[in-house]
Length: 126
Image (cartoon, rainbow, N blue to C red; front, top):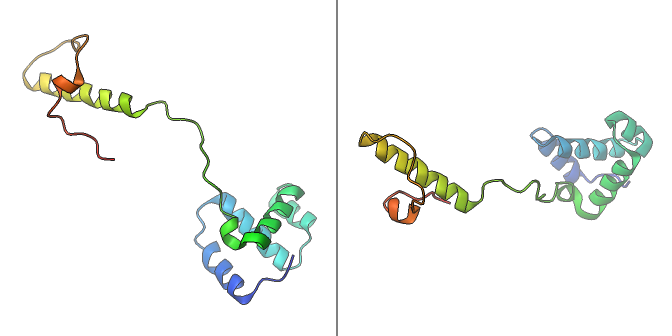
C-alpha cells in the first residue's frame, strides 16, 4: 500500500477517535497498520480477520479513501409491521382509550373501520 498523505494521517487520527461502528474502526486499523509497514498477513492476524478482507479494505481505501471504507446501506430483515399495520394498531389503541374514558369495557367490535371510528385521531408523523 502507498504511504498515507499528511491529510490522510490527520483524517485518520480525527475519525478513528470517534468511530462508533466497530466494523469501520477495524477497517481504519487495518489501513493504519498497513501505513506502519505491517504485511497483509500480520494485519489479518492482529485484527483476527481474513487476509482477503484486509486486501479488500486496502484496495477500497486506495480507490475511494476513508469514505469508501464505510458500509453501504444494507436492507436487512424486512420489518414485520408495515405502515398499514401500524396505523391500524394506533387506531385500536385510540379507540380503546376512548372507550375507557367513557367507561366501556370488552373487546373492540369486529369489523370496525378505523377511518370512520378514528377520523379525529392524530396521525403518526413521518
